[in-house]
Length: 88
Image 1: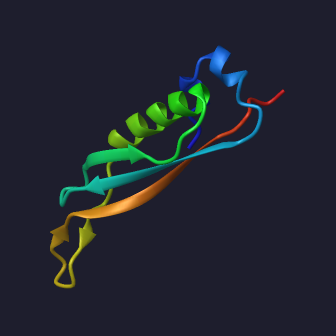
Image 2 (image 1 turned 90 degrees about the vertical axis):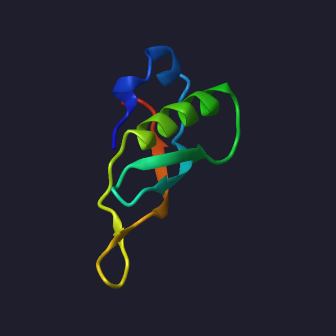
Image 3 (image 1 turned 135 degrees about the vertical axis):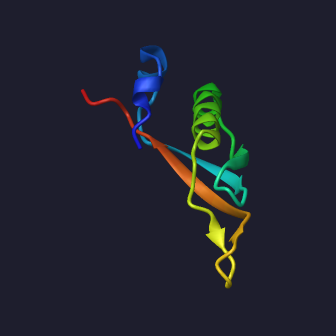
């Protein structure tokens, strides 16, 4: 996914190389994200991007995981958001 359209030009200019933000999510049996937590740390740019990635993860919907009998069940996943420098 491309998220640069949500990032202000001032922040975009500070992304000099790809920045990866890993977000752990918990998903309920209906496929809604009920918790999202960014992993890692860094400077202010990383923290800002981690907030953006966490917000994007929270707004996501998933097809629910299923038990062996086909019943939807809660699950967890790890998502990676890659913020790349803007094209020159």
